[in-house]
Length: 372
Ligand SMILES: *[C@@H]1O[C@H](CO)[C@@H](O)[C@H](O)[C@H]1NC(C)=O
Ligand SMILES: *[C@@H]1O[C@H](CO)[C@@H](O)[C@H](O)[C@H]1NC(C)=O
Ligand SMILES: *[C@@H]1O[C@H](CO)[C@@H](O)[C@H](O)[C@H]1NC(C)=O
Ligand SMILES: *[C@@H]1O[C@H](CO)[C@@H](O)[C@H](O)[C@H]1NC(C)=O
Ligand SMILES: *[C@@H]1O[C@H](CO)[C@@H](O)[C@H](O)[C@H]1NC(C)=O
Ligand SMILES: *[C@@H]1O[C@H](CO)[C@@H](O)[C@H](O)[C@H]1NC(C)=O
Image (cartoon, rainbow, N blue to C red):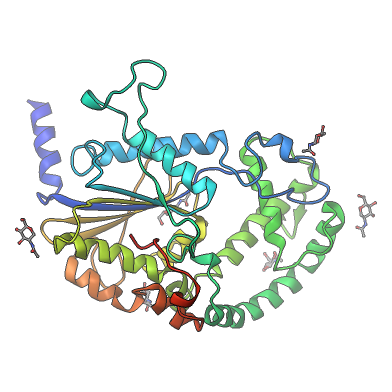
């Protein structure tokens, strides 16, 4: 009896609306540094079995766990099995993002029933297509790599006073770090190189004593983390900057919902594999950022329901998807209002982005598939 009452309360808590499309974008999993973090560091590439820049074993697990989590959340609605007509997975052209998409897919689509094709060694895995934007400008999933003079201009103007302030405040610490790390010079522009030490800490690699030394009341490593947070967010934390870097993605998510509603597509599970800067830009473009760094495999989720409402979530831990509310709406936001509130942030094509950026038209440089 108690159990039945519990079940009833569960049903009455949720709305009766049905999910009609889910969209997700995640950051890749735990990765190796791109290079030796600083000249005097002893953790060279030998310490990273899959090599510089690559997903680590830990990162593969994070990807698979995200897939399992998505299966638990959506397995009863839009993601029961792998269906090519319903599911779409697009990755940036980076190896770690592609591999993360593979890991997510492995966790999400273990073969069942007539999809079982092997009974022992690979019993729980089946292949699924992962699209990439190979050879094109990845304005959608790697917007930080797109040349955009007007963005640079806006960014430099905002950044200059902050850079000056930080270089002054931290001058002493930077000099001291220069000596100890063997870096030629350290300032606002390259202090982030040292954040790669965080990747070593994530892998329990013993660190030299100086990292725990206290400067102005805080340990060196905490200063490095905080400086990384400030400098990284500085790239996206205004409506103007966020539109340059996140406007195409906002448009894509809205377009996907519009297309489904207009019966232009049958896809109702659209997933994107990308990078911290991509998610940061998106969160700032939606005006819901928490001003923190984006953790590995953090995921933004868009859900559209058949009662014409949209819900947004940010899953930045292994288990919790935080409901996010775009300013001007409620968390359960009417679809038309959701579209209207984000209308000004949309960048509707690569040509529109180039025109915003003040660069050449896409037709003279390249074409993109990254909008599919
Ligand atoms: C990394 O350093 C170790 C010694 O700590 C050395 O044996 C190894 O050859 C180095 N690997 C590379 C790729 O330089
Ligand atoms: C040093 O500490 C003071 C007092 O907490 C603080 O106002 C200042 O911003 C700190 N400077 C740096 C470079 O951390
Ligand atoms: C640089 O570091 C060395 C030890 O690694 C130390 O002997 C020397 O005094 C340091 N110089 C400065 C300017 O901090
Ligand atoms: C972002 O949201 C804040 C309130 O949370 C609001 O003051 C600001 O105007 C919004 N920015 C844009 C560009 O909508
Ligand atoms: C889309 O298809 C559904 C089911 O066939 C139909 O009820 C709906 O009216 C169609 N919508 C549009 C915009 O054509
Ligand atoms: C995750 O996001 C929530 C909501 O913005 C925030 O309160 C929390 O501190 C974040 N945690 C991490 C690990 O980023």
